[in-house]
Image (cartoon, rainbow, N blue to C red; front, side, top):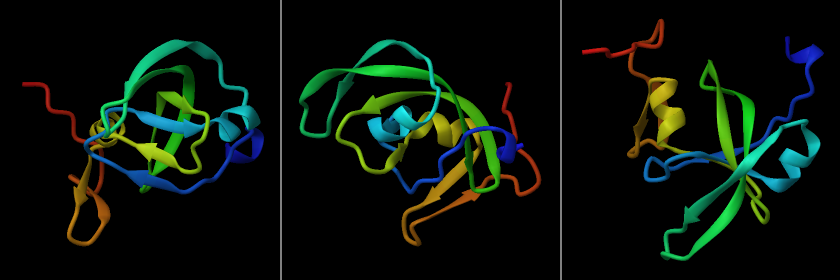
Length: 113
């Protein structure tokens, strides 16, 4: 499917303290991602701002994939992968080894109760 759809491969930083997926403006410019409005963002130093929000971002990470909305960061270089993506893809962070691993190796496990 990737051969039929315009796609970009880029590096990313996992930050479980961040909530959303964040994409650099240059990546959004390369892809036909619809802008769905704006969202308020807060940085680690407590600054706030408004950034565009795009939808229909198909993301593959650690062999799993999903469709997400993303905040657009004008000066960004890498993607920022936050808790929503990690939760949806059922990935856990191992800070000691700086790696991700699936909670269940064969499938995404959805807790419903």
